[in-house]
Length: 137
Image (cartoon, rainbow, N blue to C red; front, side, top):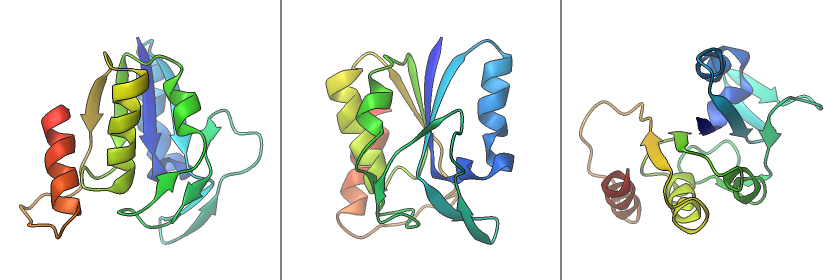
């Protein structure tokens, strides 16, 4: 099984355990992260020569508004069976991933992780994005 994991928080080693567990189960996992993120109370820069994909992002550090300028389309071309999106379903990167999946990997299952555990009424356009992403997962 080919899994594409997209996770801004995976810049921190402690947040890559999910990817490592999938690999231990025999999955072929491609990980995509931004070049840096504020995680674990500090800025973490991805070192050079990491064994995962690092994409350039716009609005890096903003969990709602960041998007990939590079890396996402190339990662999607790995023809994943599953897209493991560790991003909020109301985020711009969730919408970007959904659109990329529809075009490049329409048969891939989309799984979305959300840290939000209460019902919220997001302002527009986030409410529309969340509704669309959740309907297509």
